[in-house]
Image (cartoon, rainbow, N blue to C red; front, top):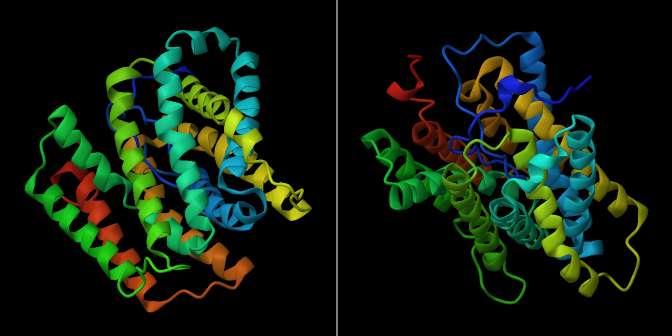
Amino acid sequence: MISAPGPEAETAPAPAAVVVGVAVPAAPPASGEAAPMRGRDVTDLLLLAALWGGSFLFMRISAGPFGPIPMVGMRTGIAALVLVALLLWRGRGSELAARPGPLFMMGLLNSAIPFVLFGFAALSLKAGYSAILNATAPFWGALVAFAWLGDRLTPLRVLGLFVGFAGVVVLVWGRVSFDVGGSGPAILAALGATLLYGISANYARRRLAGVGTLTSATGTQLGAALALVPLTVAYWPEVMPDALAWLSVIAMAVFCTALAYLLYFRLIARVGATRAIAVTFLIPVFGMFWGWVFLNEAVTLNMAMGTAVILLGTALTTGVIGPRAVPR
């Protein structure tokens, strides 16, 4: 059974781990030496990666029947209902009123707009392809932190940025076309979404310090849902989506968003943010796997090579490889 994160997980946000057509709310910094991962933690990590990787499959299925905006409006709305109910059950509903402006802005930057951009990308890109592009979010996060917050870019992090963006070039080589029906706009939309994830991660550091992780997750989904209500109504499809599209949206909201956040926060509370961030490296694998199993999407050599290079860059940029990975 997944329980809500306890008070030990409710600390000020650090730079967010941004993964999945799902942006992960800012993770609290680990206090002291993180506990070693046990069998249950590894299971949680794999389940979390499977859920977030699955969000790209569900977007690929539901973006066409619903349209990107109504799909995201339903996804954030259902996720918000689940998370608000949980927050109220814990007697902490009043926390949403503490910083409504920043939470609403975070909902726009961290969910509403990037989810819609990934929804647009899902109309033409493979689920696995979108999942791989999503892994570039830490690069934007590092660049935005450098430009906005004055964070230092060590030589290894700079190397990671170059390696990571080289991986993007490998991934999109020969695919970028802006002709009618070309994938260029979809690729730019996915990269624009990850840029917004990087901006929102640093916005959380500045404006949501001290806000609990569950409150932040609930507030961002609620803000995104409210912002999208008028557009969801305006762009609601004339033909009612089929049962598979509805089930995909509901699964994406309940499992890939609400349940996944609870898993992520529980993992942080038990093993620390540094180890929990390992989920970033598994999401593209699951994204490609689900696309191959359920949509018969081929995994090409370019995708495999691009994934490897991008994840190497991610490891260097986030400090998984190098002196920053050494416990202090």
